[in-house]
Each structure stands twice: as structure tokens, then as C-alpha cells.
Image (cartoon, rainbow, N blue to C red; front, side):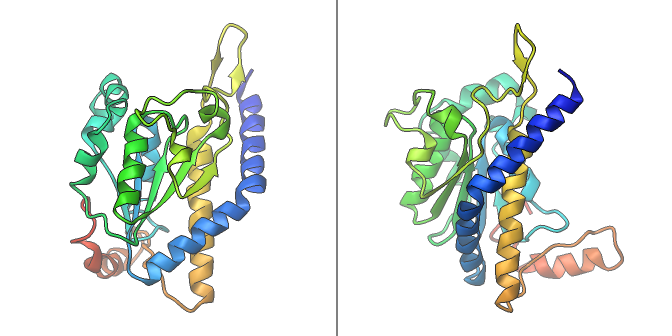
Length: 242
């Protein structure tokens, strides 16, 4: 097993995801395009390494200004890997976190969880739906359907979302078989593809309709920072981490 085997496996996963999930991606993009036209916010939630996908969308060149990541120290590996894993299993913690954010009916709430089994992402989805947000789950059906729920409802994430995108990640999220063990994850790369594919479709829809989306540009090109300041002005009271 080497880097080329990994490249081959990742390439197959990306193709499978693109082929099998394209129509769902287009459906999600339509939801997000409609929300953006109505000045709604796109929220992103994950725990542990899934939280990296929330960072992927936030405050970056080529992204949208209306993207709101949920960054809770208790759920971030930067503040303790073991602690973040422990906290993800705590029921009723998600509402405490989300109460600190400006979630409004009509917004879009995307939840990332590869296994989909732990209480925090399930609670987050339930909380957002109760508030009137459309909930998108990015999860692995191959993984989630092989594990029991740790939530008191007995449900995994895909069972409480409005729309489910199947990442196709292997059970255990380890692509390469070394005989005595499996290793090398795939969920981050596939997850990043999914969210940027949604963004590409969303921007395509908006531009075809003549709507100018709030796209950020690189602050390292001439005039970039000044343009971004104008774009971000309307969102400063709506997005906590700006």
C-alpha cells in the first residue's frame, strides 16, 4: 500500500460520489440559491475532524460571505482530541452551543458526520429543524447503517435531516488495508469535494438568474481587502466569527 494506491482509492470515491450524488447536490444547491436570494444565512456544523469542513467554507477567497460556521471549543480537536470525542457523545449539548448563534427560520443548516451516530450532530439537526431551518446531512450511509445510534431517539443523523448527501466513505473511514490494520482516511477530501460542488452549482444557478452572490475574493490581490470589507459589512451582525 502506497501513495498511488491511496490516490486510486480517493479518485474512485470522488467519481462514485459525483455520479451517485449529483442530483442531490443540485437539489441542495437550489435550496441554498433560494436562501441566498432571500438574504438568509448558510450554517455549517461538525464535530472533531468533521469540523474542518466548516473551516473550509468560512471567510475564504472564492467562497461566500454568508456562510456561518459553528465553532465550539468543546467539539474542536485543537482544544483536546479526547475531550472533543467525549463531548460529541453528550446529549443536549448541541442546543447549548447553537443558542449562541443566530439561527433563523429559512436559513440552511448543513451537518457533517461520517458515522452519523453520535448525539451532538443528531441533536444539532433536530434543533435546527425545530427552528425552521432546512437541514442537510453529509454522512456515510455505508458507515451509518452499520452502527447503532448513541442518541436516545435511536436515530442516526440521516434519519433526522431534510436532505441527505451520502459521502460513500468506508465503514471505519480507513481506505487502505495493511493486513493487521486499516489506515488513511478519506472523509475530509470527499467532504470538501461535496461542499465545493454544492457551491459551484449554487453560484451557477444564481448567475444564470442575474443575481450577484456575495463572493469573497483573495485579500492578497490588489483591492481585494477593500472589496471584501464592503461585501462583509451586511453580515457582521449575523455571523459570529467574522
